[in-house]
Amino acid sequence: MIVNSVSGANPSETWVKAIDFVFKSGKRQSGLSREVLNFVSVIQNPLDISVEIDDLFRKYIGTKWIGKGANCIFPVTLNHVSTHLWSKDYWGRLRRYREKVDQLGFVVRRLKSKPHSKQLCCVTFDPELDMQPHRPFNPRMPCLIAVDIKFRDGKLNLFAMFRSHDFGKKAYGNFIGLGKLLSMLSRETGYEVGEVVCFSVSAHIRMKEFNSVRSLLLDYKRPEYCSMKKSVRTNTLETYNSV
Image (cartoon, rainbow, N blue to C red; front, side, top):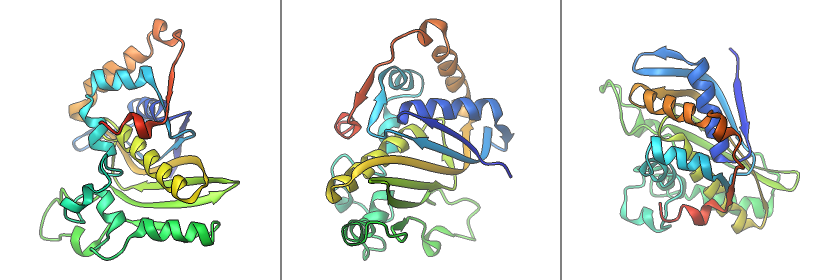
């Protein structure tokens, strides 16, 4: 089976390239208007955004979905987890898995003592909790299954695996949240921020977002838009603390 990939300068550019690919190459599957299997998204500068693409997302998809996609991975307020069950969001599963394990804390400590370790992996999936054979569908099963961190060539890189990835609404915010998570790890270890790489087993656009995504892509590809000087805003960690 072929692995498809896109690469972009920042979360915004990577996301719009990804939805363009999924829109053009994806197949109809059940309730999904488009689906591509084994899809890799490479975000070269995860702390930047393209302002124009960001504005298009807000116009056609909605500002709230940036927060919904980002804050479950890296909450606006870092004590956010204290008021929720550990299993409610990715941050809780990464910070206090089963109320016992601070996986991110382990990663930070190991990075300081053995930065080139190949064991810097955090999981969010819990078979006992998430596999419910008597239910036809479990809405609480996490889409983000695991993250892995690698320090190579002087930079800290983050790899994320999604079993199911909603590119119509959630992926853009997810990209931003993963960048914020990598920024935190970089700040706590002193290593330079590298890339974020997402592997999406199922990258898809749902029926509800099909028309919005199509309109966004048509707008994005207008000649007058393509000829615009693209502006980049840096440090999404600060930019999206209010989302």
